Length: 536
Ligand SMILES: [Ca+2]
Ligand SMILES: [Ca+2]
Ligand SMILES: [Ca+2]
Image 1 (cartoon, rainbow, N blue to C red):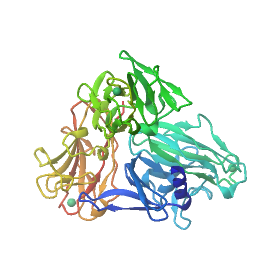
Image 2: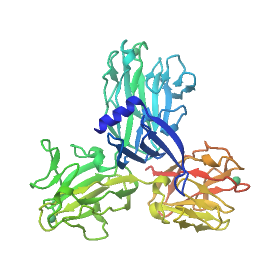
Image 3: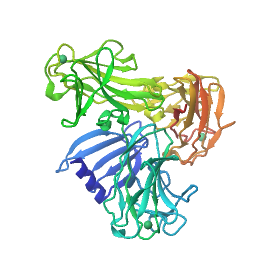
Image 4: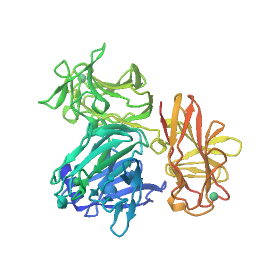
């Protein structure tokens, strides 16, 4: 059903509009809105990829609004701007990637040679390979899908060869090229899972094979962040970083895949983990192994399954390795008839290889103990993912610098933003504004190591006037970017700059992302979305 629905959208096309969301006081959220041909909103995506999907019945009535996984699709993101929605249009000349240029007359991208082309519907190589590039806006695990095939009006010639790279490493096929023969309109659909760090680059490359006659190729890559367990569920242990286990009281043991029932089966009859529910016969445990070091947020409701609302209930907890992380101690009880359940929201620092266990215990007996638990895990180094109403939450603080010292701002619940001493000392999720005082985002290192700081800073699109701002990054009392003085951002600079800085930090070190008003404070709304990742 979902497939059919999506397919309709793809066939008839999606109109993409970007505008400023002014529906709330906090305002100013840059989002992309996707509509179907009937003008119904079908997807709402923040620049980080955080996505809400809307579904409708045949009468056009809204039937669901759900937080989807962060989701990036080339076809709906196609743009006349390099980098828009994280996509770039390039050629590979055998030595390096080069940006294509937009051909406004033909509404498509062109490279150095006549038939180096990327349009919304097809790619065409010409000696040079053509490459669709996608840059990861956040750290996490992704799944890459999307069919590649010859274009229906070019079903001749000696075909093309395709592959997917992550930075300089090939991720699909295992080696060499995937051949697509000249008349192959069916093509192939890769399914590849890859861990990415913010800033990592994927390339979807088409090579002409032999000659370039009739080489138009359709490729619609789809990239989905799969931190949510239900999106990552698999019939293989360890796939997407998830494992399916039982806990004997002494040790964890892998379950076995039951192909007939499409679920995991432990040693006892009712030790079961399916995509929709877990059932203990003793304890069952979902295990997630951190693919990289960083700070994560764990959410996701746990409740009794709707068809098992009887019995003496279950008990649940979350462990990191052998230390309990939720609840504070003991177990969280879920009553037999509790279909509402509880939704933990926990922030934890992990080192690559750390294990999280989501454990369900049968409590009393195991009658009717089917339990629905859909843990979601996201890395929260990116400020926009970590923004909070609490100082220090997710390691971020909201401050002013008054020329002498840093002072905490206070949360304004009405406006959903942080406020300092003066009227325009403001930090919201989407923008910062100085007012005599500098506005300062502070991040405190949760562990010792080497980090990379990235994330664009620019004037906010609705404040493109005035004498601009000045920005810098400090580590404790030492400036780390720019080399000295300030980085100026002129009043109308919506493009801005993206620092890339590597710094060693010791646990407890503070980084400050500082915006100074420069001259006066008129129109000084500034977007800055720092991303911090441990790189060791
Ligand atoms: Ca060819
Ligand atoms: Ca029970
Ligand atoms: Ca100014």
